[in-house]
Amino acid sequence: MARNRFDVDETLEEPLNFKNLKKVMVYVMRCKGKMLAALILSGLGSVVGLTGPLIVSYAMDNSIPQGKLDELVRLSVLLGVTILVNVSFTAIRRVIVAQASQTMVHDIRRDLFAHLQVLPFSYYDNRPHGKILVRIVHYVNNVSDVLSNGLLDFIIEIINIIFIIFFMFQVSVPLAAVTTAGLPVLIVFILLIKPKQRRAYQLISNKNSNLNAYVQESIEGVKVTQAFNRQETNLGILDRLIEERRRAWMRAIYISNSVWYSTETISQIVFSLVYIVGAYALNPMASFGVLLAMGTYASKFWQPIVNLANIYNKFIDAMAYLERIFETMNEPPVIEDRPGAQPLPPVVGRVEFDRVSFGYEPGQKILHDVSFAAEPGESIAIVGPTGAGKTTIVNLISRFYNIEEGAVLIDGHSVMDVTLHSLRSQMGIMLQDSFVFSGTIADNIRYGRLDASDADIVRVSKLLCADEFISKLPRGYQTEVKERGGGLSQGQKQLIAFARTLLADPRILVLDEATSSIDTSTEQLLQRGINLLLQGRTSFIIAHRLSTIRSCTRIMYIDGGEIKECGSHDELMAKRGYYYHLYMAQYRDDPQPAQPPLQKAEGAPA
Image 1 (tube, rainbow, N blue to C red):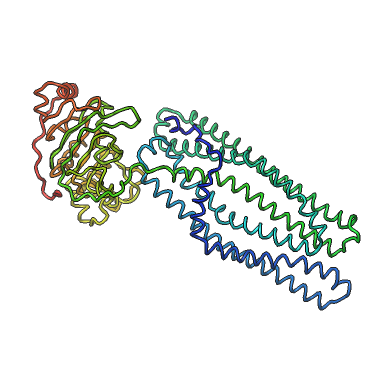
Image 2: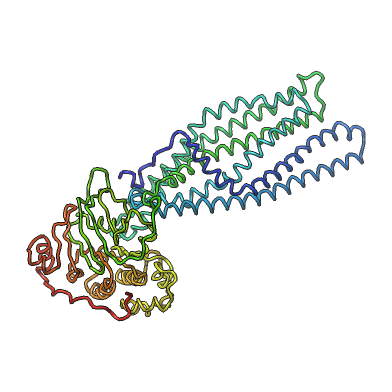
């Protein structure tokens, strides 16, 4: 799909989705105790702090002219106490809000990561992984401050404005009216500029996402880049993405600064008018103490307005990121337990396809009316040309996709009617790319069975000849491996994957071209592991190398989404059909004898 590109912008959401705001409040309400405590502290600190101008005004108009030195000292001490209380309450509030902020970050990131783990394969097929990663790390960090400090500051500034207006009207009604006169002008300006500002920050979100996707793709493909001398070309692409991000950022900054500039301009005009009106227009003229107090209050009144403008800018910025976060959270899992799904009982291993038809895209069938049955303990090889539907068959057994027509049954239970956990916990799946996680060798083998002992790990490794190379590593099974198994050969990673699967002891086994990326000598070593895995299990093996499947119970030749032939190796060779021609094309220059019948190996799981 076109959107699976690092240089394709994601769709901008328009208009603002208020459902996202409701979801945000769920995380805020989890910290309501801390938020309420911070709000109370801020409110008390604000009220105490706002008494300062009144104290100064009284001292200017009364204590100083009348020479009341003792009263002036008491007022000075009282003013110092108000400042100390305000500062102390503010410091405590910041600590509380920081705790609430990190709690929200933790909860959002955890929920987002949990949801990503249940999304279908198609979601990851259609998006660069860098664009997914940036949502979990960068976007969540960006919204955390707005959800805690931003929301709290918004409420506090509104309260501050209300208190300031109250105190201003207590000092002078005309000058209070002058101070608030510029507010309607600012509100109209903000309403007019809001759509442009939101769209500008959405564009920044897109450009950040594109840049992150390209950087991750480049890091993963750095070996190919160096092999083909693509460094300069790739640097040019990066420069273009950085420049697009810079232009988007500067546009957003220009718009945001216009809000700040307008607020500052209006506040300074109002501040000047307070002194002009108080000194020349009022009759009688305002006293020095009143002018000083009203000037202070005018400054304090417009400071929350400036703060609200900044909070608004941050809010618009955060909404662009929240839209992307909740876009992911709103993505339906698709593959999930049906209502009333029951756990799959311990299986014997009979797998049946009953007239199954399936396509990844509507109207484009990959499988057409496929029917077959695999009895417990049988090994079924699936061969055929690329795109014939081989992997699709095994994907449906594991229910990585929902079945559209027909049914896939395990021991008579439809895979659509049982819980995913009970289904997949009894299956073992090995893919062409044997993924090795960062951590120890032992942790990687234990991945599918966390209760396995060290002795169990060593036992299966010896059965698969993996112990031979593991024991030679610096710390043996406790050797730390790098990301994606860096430092290990492909064959060694395959052996670890085989050990992981054997340790899990699945009843149904799927090998999807598990040996296609390794050399012939390593394959011969792995063949013993394959034989061990197949014994006593219902197995499905997809392989281009026919040497790994000649001894399978049955071989199915798939083409065009249909089973063209089915039988043992000898039966299909005798028919001289599809499989015969495939076999002869692969082995005409190097014929090999058939593999001996599988035998139970000592120590292999039942």
